Image (tube, each protein chain N blue to C red):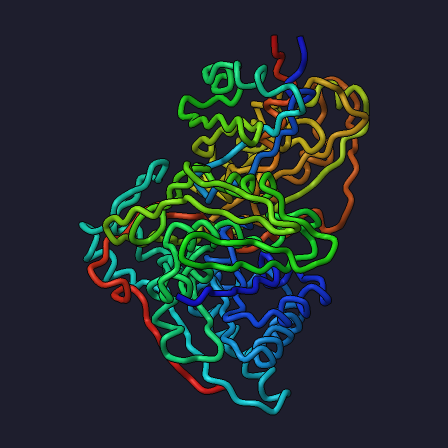
Length: 446
Length: 95
């Protein structure tokens, strides 16, 4: 078999890379350029709305550079989880950006679009094929209709189908981070354990090396293993940096589940080869074909207010102040907006805003910001609740008999709309007889 | 006696929207002490009975994974990327 050379420009489109390193990678004649386009890491809003986290100008600039790079290298270009969330609207957004660039460059290209969207009614009807993963919330099929976007994570098979169309550019909806890197080496008969392990190591670009912000690495797959080589001169892969990447954003660093099986890295060996590292010994264990599902639904509309407490006596008594303020606020809301559903939470910025009640720290700061976060079923109701809370944030006294205090507001109006708030719903897998059954492949000219 | 934050560089991060993972990268010579900490002690500190643990002597790392106390981005979640949970362990006293 012929080894497969894959160039990974960065951990995600939008993060940038070292231009010289990309050129060095192109000079080595890659068989494929592949980059991840998304993640759930920034929260449910992107999937809920079907939009990208990064600026269009940044994505368009980077993607245009990669389209030109792949054209010069004479190899296909693949993006996984397009537009942060991989929903159909985000795939279409990437297609539009792709066509804009091709038109400007005066070229044409064949573009494959892999859609991962799931129909709520269809998925509800197939609910007997859906299994919750450990840690999944209680979810019934009746909740699916409330979801704004439901996607399944494509594996290697669906990406292989997209590549098999002969497309110059493949825009994938939601896919596992590894699928876009494992697909070609698996299709060409490279070692299956190495294909998945190399894909996991390379999915974040140069994060598995020193100087991670240079971005660009090359993965070389063959019959017995893979070699990871950073393309920036200053960057080095070491057995430790490569092995440690299995820890990153990964609950289990030894066994990784993918559509159609699992990767076991417990017997992997990591051998230094100059600036590169050679990895062998990982095992791919085939299993039932399942794909993971993700969904987001709207949870309400958010408004927040921020007040700054600087008076040392109020800072010292912040727990009591917040508790009595919240009680008065809830009574006032119940009186003025009877029956209104809402969520109100006071978070003490500078005290325990990150960890809440679990905060082990006891230091008393000079000042504390108190952020009131309100969520209600309409934007109007959320704003109205926030306005009922506002006079208390401005003047609530620590004890009833003291003169009325006034606190510091950093902006006016004090209520800021946070917009629609979304929630992740599914942590489940769907069993498939045919890997393409939950996906749609389209080929268009651009 | 030492604090865990002096024995290891501690990083916490989401592992998907429903799990957190905390990596303890041990300082040279500290791995044995960190690895000797019972899982129950970590679990008590993290307020979770569902802690999965991986001891990785080759990397001098102890890794802990646990279901998120609040689903990522849900109304009561305070830490979108899970970055703050590391600080639950930094002040832990180690024999």
